[in-house]
Image (cartoon, rainbow, N blue to C red; front, side):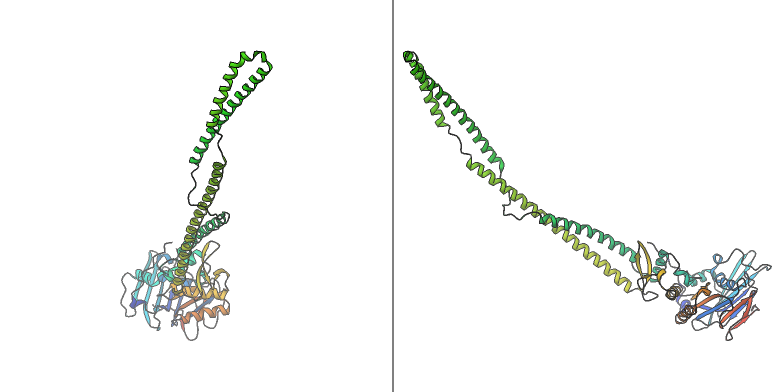
Length: 455
């Protein structure tokens, strides 16, 4: 998954420590008549309070409009009844010293921007300078991060971590190898079961040739047929001889007449006996024994070959499963090292695939399931990580935060040299700036707010 290119960072001399708002001066912007807030601390919470429709949202919008360019300004930025609008944002460094003054003027023809250093030197290409200073974090609402879709949360966190490899790609490769190993292990089980069903036999490596034995059997068969024919002929001659003898006994008077025939038949008997003696019937015992023995040997050889082939296949599958296991282990180790070496904004933050979709987790729990204070802690940490140069966040639903949640926001902001503008409905706390009818009604005693612009 390709990542969005990071915006160019400001020069190191200008980005060191980051910047927050020192002063905000607004005149005739949206619902505001004139608001001037000065001497803001470099870190902590700036509470903007007031009833709905009095201009408190316009005060936060003014910060966006001053720094964000045309894309941050609404279609009608000038207050009704006024011809022009103006806003000035003074940025301070981490030590509370003025660093830059941003002046944006709105007229019917458009907006005009000027950015000056604390020395009075005017910066060329002011919007480009602000874009580099603001980067991806302009107007980032810490509470919005935990409300984002899981895929967008993952993208934002990866932008912060800038890992060498996307852990989602590693996990996809691990899953592919795992599925491949599962299939190989199925083959291992199948061949093992097949191997168990083949008996172990003591047999030679090669089968006995049946062709030679078959030829010999055919020759003996023909010999047996010849012997059968000789026996049949002999039996027929013997029967004829017997008939003649009987006829001679019965026909004593005709003995002389048949003497010649008897002699002829006797001679034939002798000839047939000689032929029969030369063609004895074969003995099938040995060849039958050898053929049965050959079949038994060949069956054993086939079993041996089948078992050897199964053993070879089992070895291949087992080796493949071992290789895949090592590859999965290597990927898991790379994932572990990659994430262990990553500078997560909050300890316990991580990635996991949940129900087929990657998401950000906190202590192995999906963000939507963690407690409100934990969501704020994660969101604040992400806001600070995404805005390393302009360390300002805007929370527009501050009224939804309880006292504990607000304390978490303030503590993290101070610890991280961050400034959080918190919009709340009502009178706010003792440290709140209260906006009424487009002007500052009340300011904290330690700070200064006026209704007159400084120009």
